[in-house]
Image 1: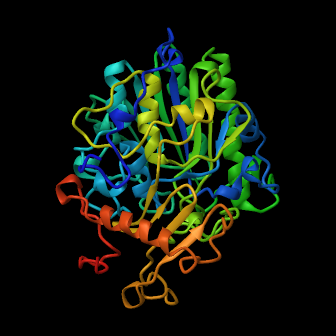
Image 2 (image 1 turned 90 degrees about the horizontal axis):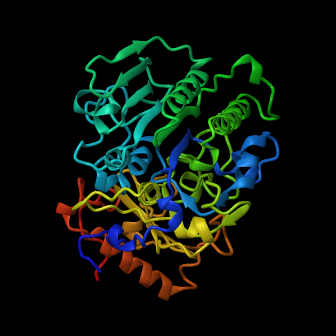
Image 3 (image 1 turned 180 degrees about the horizontal axis):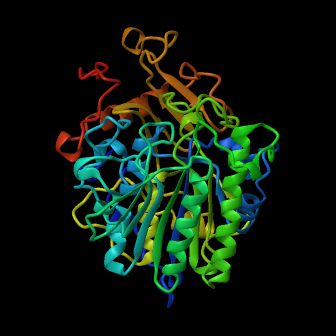
Length: 450
């Protein structure tokens, strides 16, 4: 294995199989990522919700594939968005911490990004909605990362001062617009749709990043009471309506069958919302409720219809998957941590991913494999056993215990030993390979006597 890769990751280029015939079609594929903010796995119909009507997402799932073991790149907004945009673990990308209005740093410009990879292949690229990867200096505006167009907010809509900004590549002027929080998601959709209309005859990539259902819940009058669970549910009904409008618009433009739609969330639910059968929520380290989120993908003729696939997948896999389908080469000489999901999406083939590393900020907290979850949670809560003092390991069998209710480390010592070795190997990733060094929960000292 190449020693310059994170544990379990090999050069993405080596994973890229020869491009199938569908990717070499006369017209290049378009890509729309619908990125929600703080939406839980259990918040939509395709993943079991019965109290929030999501007919358009139900249709999207019927016409596409639902991934049931998809993990956001992180359990918090900023690092998750860094992972999706760069195809790298957030710590490798150098943005594993949350940003806010007072932050003076952002995602390092040295990173690869999806728009930069697609531009040589003739793509137009836009980011509409929430950015949250830096709001000052060299990290602002998003057009510095390869986007042709940006319309949106610099961070979460509960952070102030809040303004909507509009920027275009090649123009130094950034327009600043006073937001109307009740109509803000609608404005995001309207500008996203306008971008699609203007570029319908060109290949395009659109990151349609709503700042909802993140709290506070601002519900336009026409959506009040549309769910059975109050304001939070009503905002999800609004998002579902955008999915329906998007599908209709693509069909009207004659590009519905040429556009891949991916629907997902940056992390699990915060105070409200459902993490489904999974343990914990946003910002809680290691457990699935903070990381495992909805993922639906539709691309007729490429992605299987009405299918549920349980292969491991991560938000960092979106980058190489898009590049594969777009016929765009991956950036040369740069380490990506993502793997191409195309074989899994097209035919249900086994995932090319052997594991997913789980972080809390810059700290490695666990490893997820097909069956097992291994955690080393050190004192993140008042009642968490001290990992340093007790050499405490957590092992969960996710084939039989999706709620991570029972630690079976004592029952499977050989599995613990194997995954502990992987954990240590990941910890020893060469510092020069990372924008930031991997830590073990903030403790720079060696762990375990091995």
